Length: 215
Image (cartoon, rainbow, N blue to C red):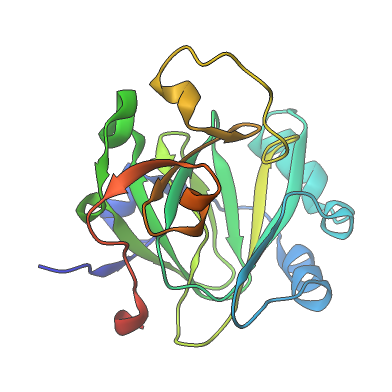
């Protein structure tokens, strides 16, 4: 059986995360839509956006969702149908969809200790516009995908402050260290992904998933 697109409201999503409720994100999403670009032929990621961080959501997610930890609010926008890579952090990530999108997810446990992850273990989940989800620290994820062919997505990304900036210089001590690609960002790539040419560890085997035929 090929890849089936499930919904973040389905029980299967509980392996990877949860729907986050109780927050008023309308002003945050409105500002994202009005102030950020969404390319039709690529994906852009901005770790921290001053305009988004000026909304009331900044304090609410800092105090409530992250328990007072310093955070950053940025975005990932654009048009995409491929898996290419999977990443993980040492904490949860909050994704808030300003438009419908699809998340490609897998379990960190299936790629632990340098293990190559077979892309057949990746699952796809539809995330409706206006929905906020927490992706657990053990969830492998990367850029969202478009929910409809040719349509760009906009997704707010909330992470601890400093994530996804320049990687520290380290002495590699284990397989996990080899995957450190940016600050608080461990990455594995498919051999056909652009990131593989940038030095990312090739840690995904099988098909480089493309959902173009499913949307």
